[in-house]
Length: 184
Image 1: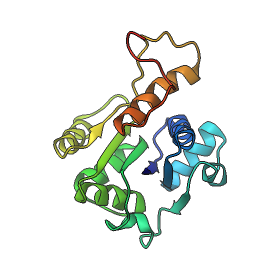
Image 2 (image 1 turned 90 degrees about the horizontal axis):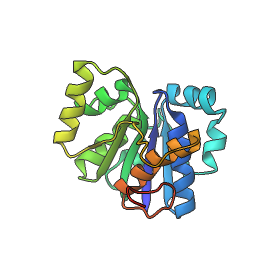
Image 3 (image 1 turned 90 degrees about the vertical axis):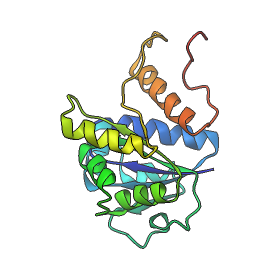
Image 4 (image 1 turned 30 degrees about the vertical axis):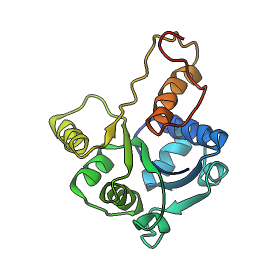
């Protein structure tokens, strides 16, 4: 299985790190593309650099490289997730404005009819944000706000992040034991 992972400048880089770690543990091939702000927020919030992320990825692409394999529908992959997804990137995907590799990869995912999951990280949301999410949802995109549940009685930040990462993995039907399910 191959998943493209987009990382943008929305707060919540911890989700992308944990998701990539879970993919690696599950034996899933990850191809990563980060926006400039995604790289900066990743370092600010998690202390992770591009090199650190490469330990969890088959390849990390430059967002300016529109010749990268993930920019083409001929690149065989099972889906893409943008985690966290800034409202700028959400708007670019919703309108087909492929100004970089990350947005282009999402555009390709949509045009090829593959699974696209977007994990928006913004609050509060305005009407533009909601309209863009609705537009994408109507196209079949899974909108998964970073809103963890608390029914499993999390004790640590890792527990809270794990509940969201478990849902992300579930969206791609990837088996895991990261988080408990309701009633377990």
